[in-house]
Image (tube, rainbow, N blue to C red; front, side):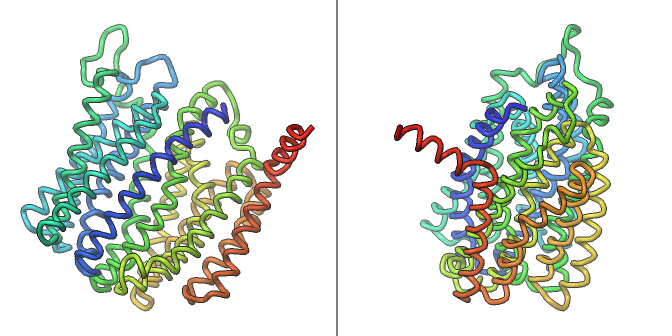
Length: 471
């Protein structure tokens, strides 16, 4: 694999994500302060439904675009059958999502229309992103994702300035942002690729069966991922109040702000892994353990520092009603966030190698662990219960894949590198306002980062560069 090209692509995605996350962070501040914990809880359930349809129906069919385009066919030849599969999956998902929305109290006609329109637009954006991913246009992906959040933020601020913002108004503005962004994305990409024109005899479309053969097992992975991400919120809604749903949802969204950075590895690395596998390179060669450990150490440092800062900043930014957010967030970051960099690196390699069946089997086990722990822990422990459930599924999913792909020794090294940040970040969750515990967590994070820099040879490289300049 071309590590420089991969690093550059990930850098583009990260740079764009900073803008997107910043816009979304400000949007969440507006929503939490305008709606309160209970209102934000209802909007979180709306997001769980629309993003859920996008994840279940749109995230996996379009993985076939970069995988199949690694051969001789055009991008359009892979996109069109993938779109057909995604459309069928979207229809089936909405048949489940609409009755679930009604059962959860999201039953006004306006809200149900928003669920459908927002879900369809988000699935369509998944397809556009897959095309841009295959083209190597990571900057465009980041720009479109940022645009969606900026539109939503601008609408929210305009409504708050003119009048009050309610739950249904929030659902409408989120839907408008998704639909407008999708329309712009289609216009931009269609000019280059002619995705919706009929196939030719010279370059026929891939059969739908080929799409399912390449990534069909990822449907199970997507469904399991949805269970992991949103079953917590639904189970909280069953056993606890809308306010508790709002508190945990905020913690989970801040958690995803951080871990989404590692998910972009899948976007950037999948085409590279597909080409490397096609050329005969083994997975262990594509994922050298020393490099993974360096990335893990640097990532753990970022997670640890973020946890310390968030513990003190969140109550100030979102208001006193969200003081309970810090504890579940720290548990999520320490128990799950640290390992996301390893999980997505393995996921990209396995999907590129067309071994998504393995990922599907592990995902089923992971979601079973997550839901089982939710049902056990949520009734007695409330908002911290889902954090431990998420930790359980993360450990099962990450280390099962790592054991199969990298081996036992690599798993032990991953555990050793991550242990200081995991332990101290979760310890801080006991008393998020404790200065001594925060100092301990910060020290562990910085020490891990220093080790990663030395392990990766970055410090040595800087010294040699300095000596060469002085001489």
